[in-house]
Structure formats: structure tokens, C-alpha cells
Length: 165
Image 1: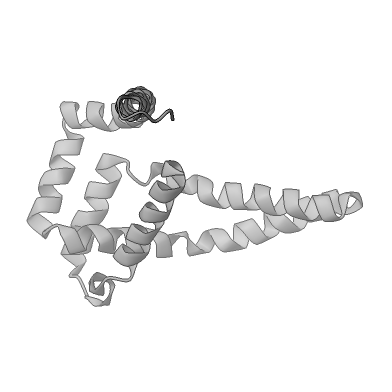
Image 2: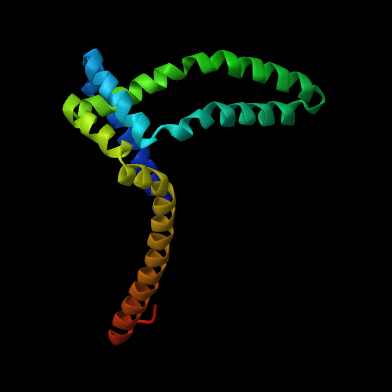
């Protein structure tokens, strides 16, 4: 339930962020270049290349389940469609650059790129995914522990009032 709520909250935040007036604003070429440099240096968009691959795999799986005899044709047609759709990737890059440009000045973006190009910035970029994953596991363990403690406390308090929960 909590995970579902968190997922809905993240989607709502994303939708709100994408519909914000920032996308209506025009940024200078220098500002967008600074955003692009910060994004490249921080490696935050590295995993986005996998989106099209995952969509193609999902499409193949869906269509192959409905018509397994045509799996070779489905693979061929899906691969062709994926290659055609790959040309749309710059749209995503531009949207991400606009998100960054809306939140940081050109000078701040240049400093971000400078930081991520430094040895400590490169280390942070390399270690971030693992740290986020480990932090998520730690949060889940802590949530379970606190949940058990809360349940015990509530049951004890209820029992003190003559109620068994």
C-alpha cells in the first residue's frame, strides 16, 4: 500500500513537473548547452537508452503471445519500428535539458558539469545508483522494524485499556 502510494505520488510529481510553465519558456542556446553538459557529466540520463529496448521487448512479447506462429515476423517488424522510433530520442533529451534549465541558471549548470567532471564528481556519479539501491533497502528494513514496533506498542496500549488487538 505504501509503495503504491509512493508510486502514485512520484507519477503525480512527474506529471506536474512536465506540465509546469518551464516548458513554455525558451532558453538560450548557451543555457541549453550548459544543461546538456551537466546532464552528460552527471550521467543521469545514461539509462534512458534502455527505454526503447524495453518497449521493443514488451511489444514483441505481447504480440508473440497473441500470435506465436508469427514470432519471426513480429521480431523483424518490431526491430524496424524501433530503429525508426530511435530518431525521436532527441525529443526526450531536449525535455530533460529544459527541466534542468528551468531549475538552474547557466552558471549553476556550468558549475554542476565542472563538479561532475572532477574526480570526486565522477566517483559520486559512479556510486550513486548503488548507494540509492542500498539506501532503499535500508529504508525498507527500517520501515519493517518500525512497523513491528508500532504494532507492538499499539497492541500493548490497547491491552492496557482492556482491549485485545
